[in-house]
Image 1: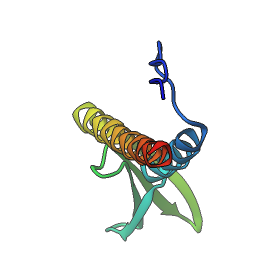
Image 2: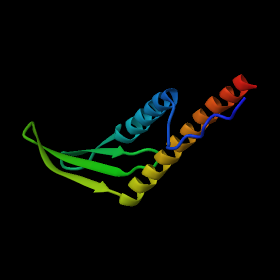
Image 3: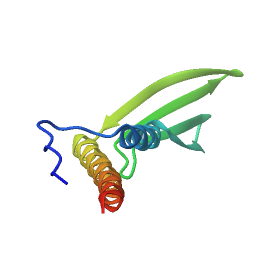
Image 4: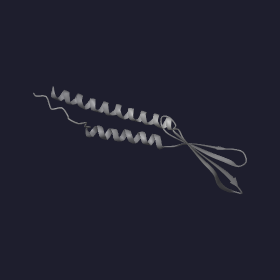
Length: 117
């Protein structure tokens, strides 16, 4: 039986693309879901601290509120992105996607080779 022609360009099987889409969705969800930590301070101040990023916290957001005569007024909000952590999260996400792609394609090729034999 003659050898099938080699592919001339990069191709991904449909099932691999679907799996990669789900993995990418989980990675995005992990990075945009925020975790909350609340606290109370002196003189009627209270704060909320949100963190974003997976596996390393890449962005912190802190809101400080003051309570005056029964009404709540927001004093300030602070954003502190860490670009090194953002790039590390991006590299980890790309490595995870590559490993999933490679694993799926190996399984497909192994099954195709078994069928031909």
